[in-house]
Length: 268
Image (cartoon, rainbow, N blue to C red; front, side, top):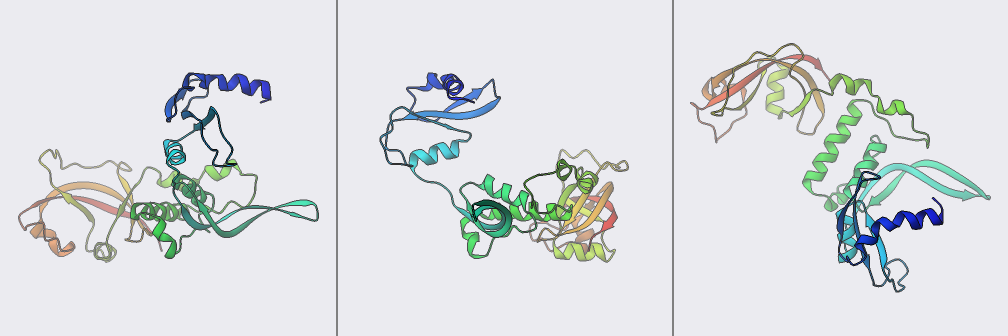
């Protein structure tokens, strides 16, 4: 886009000339959501006076962060591209080193590009919420489970995004079992998932082949089993409590929905 074309392009924002707070704008031409405002203040970048300065952001977090002069900081280690100059030549190489980001989206992107190398130290966890840590751990474990590798070239192959192992499991839900339950399952003493009974329940039902499958992970999101659910039944807690972790909030005569499964695969 040349200078003349750019001047014509930004005319779409003229309607916001009097707006000094982020204004939602759906761009019909490019089919994108933006937040637009103009400001007359010191520029954060060069500390020069700014008059009718256009600010366009793809997300509200960045826009309000600029206005309130605040933001987020996330540190981590990943494999990323480093560009240097040596003897007058531009050298590009992927290295594993410490990095940081100012949005959680960027952190997720770093993980997606380098699932093998991505890590967050115990000291760095202070910059994340528990939900964010849990999310990153589950996503990383799944990407590794389906065999995703770090990107170490500037030319990404489309085949990277055509994962055969994911195609096998993409319709399977993911359930977390605690150590007690996993032990009972692995010993062959338990073949069901138990959930609370509710008045609107219309079962029990029998599932067709391939209708209801799940991947089972342990408390640390390591993938342990691939199962297929077969049928349901209603049980009293007292009839199955020897096979379940102790639950003080459930009484012996409480009903539970028992969904039986068969094991299709066991992962090391």
